[in-house]
Length: 198
Image (cartoon, rainbow, N blue to C red; front, side):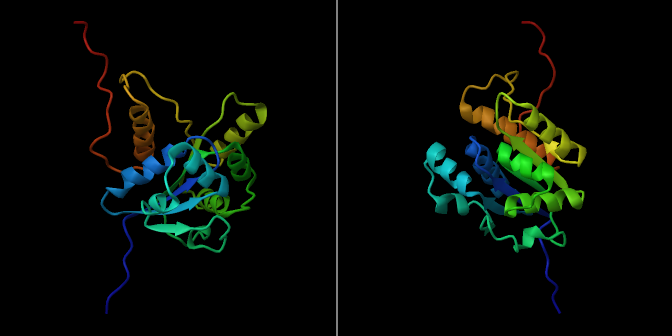
């Protein structure tokens, strides 16, 4: 008799309607090459619009990067249940509307329901929030999610490694997110301290 097995790491990747669709797509690309990682993708209606506007990628090409795809309004999907064994979830990018819904526990679509499950099951939830400047509602919602155990991760570029392209800056932020998921990666740039004067 054989028993069903699941990958060691299931990661939910959600793309909401904020600018920065490249973060979610690049995360999928980087996770795709990792052994024992299975990705579950859900994209909001506005998220698909942003992918088209910012990346010119056909929907089929984005979906091909994930192992499992769910429609945004399918709140009966597997990832909507706490019984779905999952290592972590990343909302990349995370709009202020999605942030607010997570902070208030609205569970009004599959992204916010899956995020609510992550919080209630005490699993890793990372929100790559994208907005500037921030008003008080944004800040309070970030505080609320942090107090519930989520991680607020604005994709703020780091310049200490002297990025030369936008891709360098995106890769830096996405690599940091993968670190937060606790997944080993060989190609992430590491800070080794200040170099001596030449």
